Length: 190
Image 1 (cartoon, rainbow, N blue to C red):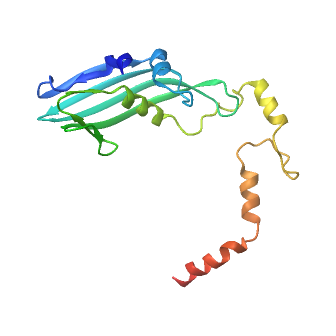
Image 2: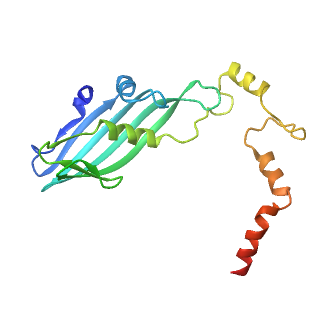
């Protein structure tokens, strides 16, 4: 991770107590760290890292605030997503590198440092909602018209509502599925 050496934190040389670090995750950072499948390719996120050392244990507290650009699920144009998250990570010295859980990492004591570049990227991507769609009327008009032109619409649905309420209502009105009737009997027995 030579290109991310800026994100190395030398744990061995930190004195007991609290230490502060600040980073700015910019377009260059997202370009270098992201892969082809990543939605986040641009952004400006301010990061504050607080590291509290107690003996050979380090408690990291991350505060991320800013904005990233992700493609809209409907029109594929970039749209801004606000990032505002707080994350925690506990780092301990050990024999070899391992991730004990989502919040606990063991690093080799002989190395004595940790690179947090990937952790920061994970915190950002986990802050992006699963569904990202422009507010109504803000999608690319050309793409929206092409999408509507090729959209499958049931014969009894005359609305342009994208919420899917008509489909949910149709499912609720149908009679029960015979494949599930045997399982319903099990619930009644309890």
